[in-house]
Length: 293
Image (cartoon, rainbow, N blue to C red):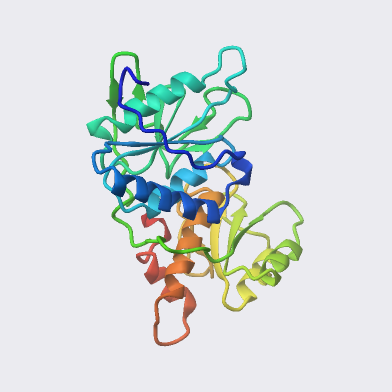
């Protein structure tokens, strides 16, 4: 790493990625802003992360940071104690990408297995394979080879710092839960989420995008709960429907739709509108179409 950049180590947390949470994300946003403010000459940020929730942390940062330098989230499939660990090379490549001028303005990036992915699009697709992180609909943005960093496309959806989500100073975010659809699913899990105080529920529905009737009945009937429909399929867009009470998650995975809905519910909390058409207000809050970011 020292052969390609001047490294400034910044201790944060040493926890399994299964223990990451919205409160940890809020702390990480504060930490990154502090680093940039205290070291204005920083040209890139690399966040090391376990792979279980890496894609969620990356997407949250991509929606909430208010800085101009590239941010790369990196992990490894094999631990440093394993034969042929991928951690060392992934970390060096992440540093190279974070310091590359072409990385500016692309949103938060992930780097594993020599591939550069967009935080909005990437997901973990395999438990053990090195090529686990994929962008199912559109593929990676570029590659990190021995001789150069090469980009081949740019994401078009909005990302930091050009979003309306500023969470600095916040200690918590509204509760949003995910309800998984499966054959014969009743409304028990959805009702449990409502009873727990969820402000929003994301349905990980059947492809091309539908919960069971029992799940819909509970979610649509819950006062003050915003309903977003995604799909458990792993790729593809959920179509808009004027006949459905749910907002479309576009092609966001359920876990990423949850993050966007959580931030949208936070935004709604601090805005005042006349009337009580919550769905219309929330849609307006997210630029009329849920998938615009």
